[in-house]
Image (cartoon, rainbow, N blue to C red; front, side, top):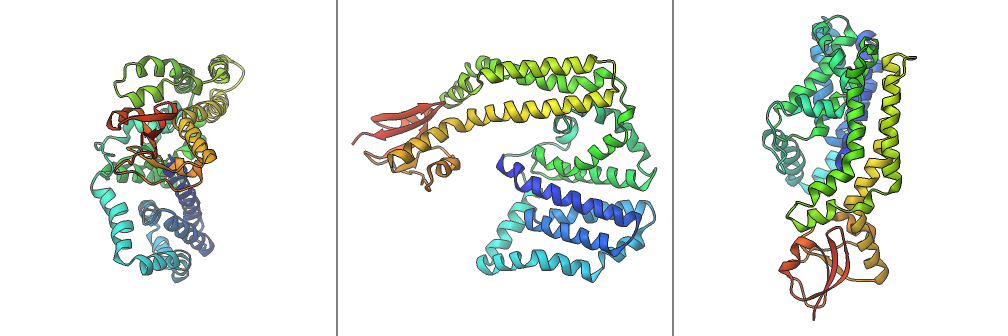
Length: 383
């Protein structure tokens, strides 16, 4: 979660800024646009590496070629000032890290996190060539998935005008590239979602079907409403104690959630049935409603479900001045809340305090429970 909300989001920002300046250059080949694009690319390279070079260069090459502007593209790509900007911004950090780490930096950053990530599935994040179509794509575009389906046939007009060409090439190259990559994560497609929103905004008037427009936001809000009951029902049948306790914590979904979520769903249904405004205008309003519901209700509840017990345990350990090690649990946030680095225990020692989870209690001897909630425990081993 931290990765997709941090570095990936920042990279997406720099990619978008670079791509918009590249399109400006495509329309009016002034050096200020191409050189500013080099600046955004350099910041993207600092953020996540070579992918910030690959996407703008590949998309622009295809789009410029389709409109007979390869000469302008070559002039921009071969501009010494542009490369000077890129190297001045990005190179110092790369050189410093290589001097500090040596070949380990090349092997780790470039080979492992870039080449290997493309060639082999890392951390079990695998999927077939159709991983991003259609489920991941439609989920990422919620609540505007219906509008996307409505404008999708416009891909046949890819060469209608430069802006259409550029936006469709941007989206399609990202889709194809990450579909071919062995490591697959849903948020990788975020790099190609920005042009879709521009395309959808350009053609929003095409959406006339209320059922196509409002089925996605209604289903999304209905899922938010049903989530607490679903977790209670399905979580109770999970055999693994830690997951069962973590997923069935009723207090994570308080009274405010249980009142506000159905209210949001009802408001979305009212919006859908209002005859006064155009479909796309009501869809934008429902999008704001969905964003408020997900950001204000769902994400805090899920955060409490996952991190609430960890935070409470960390604050107890901090306030009591306990020396704690972790046992078969990997929660770096515990160290953040506690304010100290927490080492993992390979062999528990008598009398020490351990942070662990309920499914691992059978591997310990006698102990005293200091804290227990949501499958997270602080225990003191018997001396």
